[in-house]
Each structure stands twice: as structure tokens, then as C-alpha cells.
Amino acid sequence: MSNKELVFNIIKKSSKHLTAYEILDKLQKVKKTQPMTVYRALDSLIEEERIHKSNQTKTFMLCNHLHSKNHSTAIAICKKCGDTEELKSSLFESLFKKNNVKNMILIHLTWKF
Image (tube, rainbow, N blue to C red; front, side, top):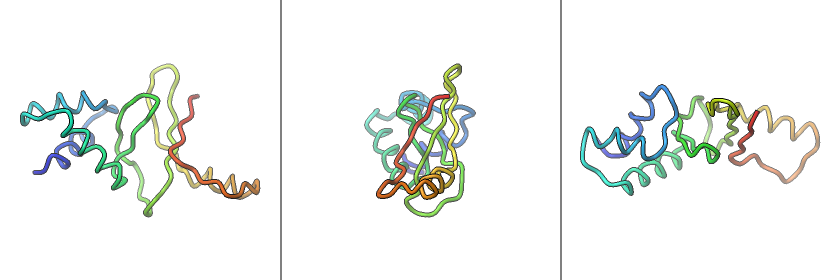
């Protein structure tokens, strides 16, 4: 199994969102690896839109919905516990259209509630 698939499975099986070093710790239980290997795998998985990164919490999460290519991601973060949840970005895109917001696209938005 490739490093990318090992990293993906670690994220998929986790009950919480993980930092890169938490992923590295879990991966090193399976095979000896370096941090850069994990970062390359994470970058590839993000590019494939199989996972998302929360820039606020520096954690990685499984993309939780079926989507078309190049979908936008909106992530809600709880101020108290730091838990995150991917929101349906189509709601925000329709809001932009209804309010006649032109030449704007939704790119990796993060809100704190």
C-alpha cells in the first residue's frame, strides 16, 4: 500500500481531525517514515479533493460528501472545543447568486461560531 493510501486510511479511521504530526505518529507504528512523506501524501490527497485542511486548527479531515470536480469548501469550527465540520458550499454559492455578488468564488472559507 502506498504512503498516500496509508495516510488516507489513518484519516478515514480517525474519530477526530488530526494534525500532520498525529498522522505521522500513527503512520510510524506501521512503517518508519519522515515528516516530509506525510506532507507529500497530504498535499496529494488535498489536490485530489479526498481530504480538506482546516487552516485555523491545522488539522486534516475526510471530505464528507459526494462532489463534482473543483468544489469549494466551507468549514465551521466550534470556538469551545475546536471541532470542525464541512458545510455544503452550494448554500453559500446560491446566497452569492441571490445577492448579485459577481466575480466571486468560494475558496476554502473557515468560520468560527
